[in-house]
Image 1 (cartoon, rainbow, N blue to C red):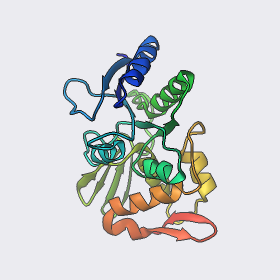
Image 2 (cartoon, helix red, strand yellow; image 1 turned 90 degrees about the vertical axis):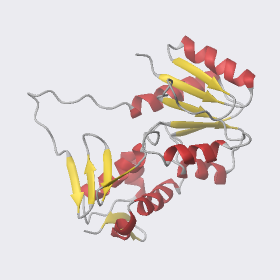
Image 3 (cartoon, rainbow, N blue to C red; image 1 turned 120 degrees about the horizontal axis):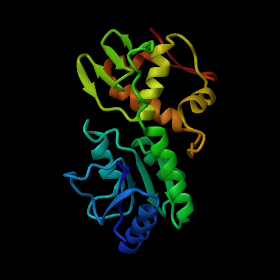
Image 4 (cartoon, rainbow, N blue to C red; image 1 turned 135 degrees about the vertical axis):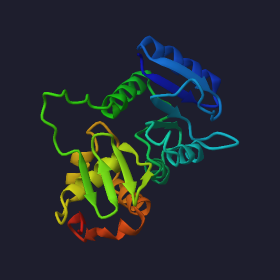
Length: 229
């Protein structure tokens, strides 16, 4: 089945142009001029404008990322805002990429393809294939590496793909200090815009989500981060 893309932008012309060109690429596309409720159309990717009323793209993304059923849907912000603060806010909300207007259709196509490629689930191993470690735990933290889920003291917590991969890296290697450069190279794909503070923003968000265990993610100043088990 073709990947489904939801375009949310309050400019009808932009919606029409993006819909036409992405459908030429074989995607199933739905457009909306304001945030909508998911019913029969559950997207594999959302292209989301920021400057909208009555609710901004940032606020709607925050709502989506707070719900387990929509938290893993990748989001590409598409907006004229280019200040570093706005970029950081987008990444802090768990966005997967950021396109600044005016944009080239070729750039949009390339970024959509890249995000969908890296967010696709890996195929399950066949019964004849040996299974690698499928679970990483520490006290009340449980990461299911097969299902890509995280539970804290028995309660499932919504994580973005980047948050999950970053926590899995630290939790799987307790005591090992990872530099920001290594984390960016390992967790973030090379075709993603990454700012200097992106790792710090994601670490802060993970600490908050894992509650009392957040203090176990420590900073070794001048070197990087590690999980102190």
